[in-house]
Image (cartoon, one colour):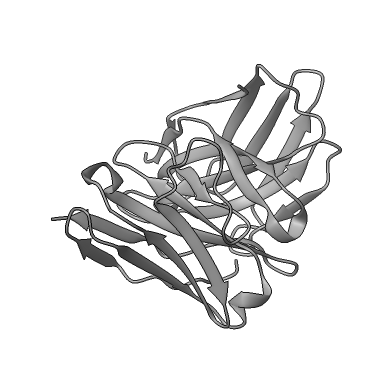
Length: 120
Length: 107
């Protein structure tokens, strides 16, 4: 069964860039879409953006001006960069695999999540 | 993102049926899936494409979607079903949207 593992700094200073990587193991990054989702403390799930194995992206409008999701098929990884962070970006960040066709996209495999705190 | 509205909480007695709604304009024109999230864990999909159960998900979980409302039904609810449930849909303009989340308590 494919596994996902998030990695990156757990603490980021305000105004700096949050960078996370998701490593895909026991499976290939090809032929799927991949996504980042976050969950602020005590709150619900928030979709950030997704990317195809070929590099097609779509982002949520609330972060679109600050976010970049990229893919490295050679390393079987995809990454998230979120610039100009504030305390509101403090959350557990999950990476996940998207399956299905566009109209019924759903996430069938999730990473364990990584906590990112924005603080000076 | 596409905005979906859920009730904040649902309480159910063991063995009874819990129904969780998810509402948005013309939601029935889209496909909805449902995730279960237990405390400190990653979400797990329990229903996709409105009413399909992934392998390993108990038959007591079922889904429907029509008009402006999708519903997740848990029949014969067990204590292990406690947690938060989120609906999710995809919109061609806005991308992926999650519901506001519903806390299910088995009393």
